[in-house]
Image (cartoon, rainbow, N blue to C red; front, side):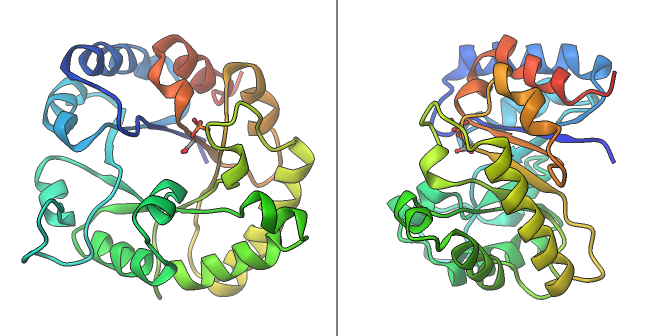
Length: 243
Ligand code: PGA
């Protein structure tokens, strides 16, 4: 299976830099041996879709609402994303869980809505620093998986330890190996019939990407800060390209 490298631009990207970044990814994509997913903010989806059209790189969004339509001021439904040419949607990112009060059940409903609209959810789970310090990282993530993934889940899971996001320090290869082994066991138990790629996210950079992507059970990376720099993002994508 080719590794998956997904760019989470978060709340970054006015028109000109978004266009430059998307163009750089489009131009490099055919020479790369990994799957590329670009997740711009909502306002740039249409423009980035036009840039990526016909390219092997895919378009993703960063959230959707769990309802199909209705009185949800400021929200965007999964069908609206699908109509814009979006194929993937990040759900349950820790910044949404922390800043918008999303709980596992919200994420589960969103994942159901995304699948119903034909999108592939990228669901994020990960423990806080306190939970890790208390030795609760596996239990926390196990419960998050159980609560956030709906029955019949078909999509991607991203393990993103909250303490490593935007922190400049990623989890160590040993931490990642332990957690990805544990999570793969949970996925095999809870979803025996599904092949669910498992990404790592949290301060993935060009200088640590090779080591992280070589860890067993790591099927790719969800990249925040480094995805805003075309050179850095493409260096990570090259690290995911078999020699
Ligand atoms: P980071 O973010 O690469 O900036 O740590 C990753 C993420 O939040 O998905």
